[in-house]
Amino acid sequence: MTFESWLKKQIKRNDSVGDLANDFISAKKTYPERGVKCTKEHLDRWYAIPEAYEALEQAKNEYANKT
Image (tube, rainbow, N blue to C red; front, side, top):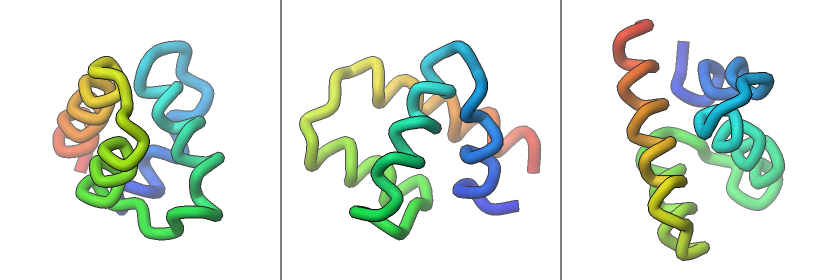
């Protein structure tokens, strides 16, 4: 399972990872590639708040533990 497919499954979570997943879905048309590195670059481009980076780090860790 890719990071992208895992993250899509997190969309209904009521936490920061769920928020990241929702942002991921809405940005999919603009930024079609969605690995961990590409997601971080997307956050960098939009000057994301620190909590968004924390959510990505949490998602990355959870994904690594699930695969």
